[in-house]
Image (cartoon, rainbow, N blue to C red; front, side, top):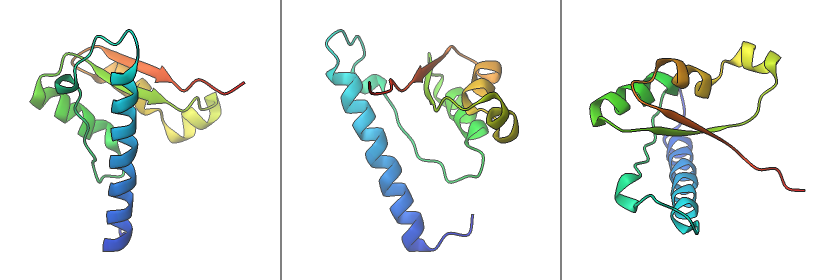
Length: 104
């Protein structure tokens, strides 16, 4: 990617904030069985994050990968690819796919 330094930093900050908010939400759940030390987040600057996630999972010998799903239609999923589907197929460990609950 050919982002300016300012844009790169802004994207990294936004991704980090999103990950930290997700981690706080998981840890704040009433029936949570996960400890903070068990959750790792990382920001990868790559056009295709799928292989970066798999490499990290293998390096860190993680017991599971938790990933979100945007709920793309079948056509968009075919054209754009699905990170969660790819990870489920290729990961060396279980993959948990979470779908955002839509507001009523």
